[in-house]
Image 1 (tube, rainbow, N blue to C red):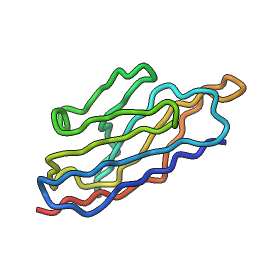
Image 2: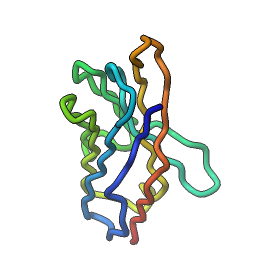
Image 3: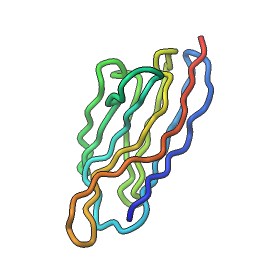
Image 4: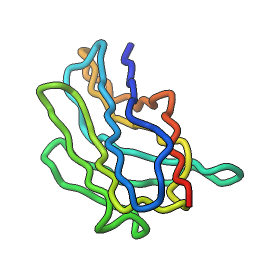
Length: 120
């Protein structure tokens, strides 16, 4: 079993910055893609950013130029640096990972979510 534990969510004013972290632990052989998704009240969960094991990144158009995703493969951790935050960035941010287990099964996992609230 694998656990993804997020941290870093908070209440921040518009224009401010936050850094989210997500650490994976458990029965891990390797981790392929990792990413962040968010869900605002009354809306569907949406992709924010993803990063491959080799460091290739992908961003939602709404966060390009403001958010940066990175990872530390030695720590099985993915980060999301969020700058110039806007009220529309408010939501629960979920960590996601495709994990290759010790038995070479690729399984996707989700974290429990961390709340980000941006006040205007």
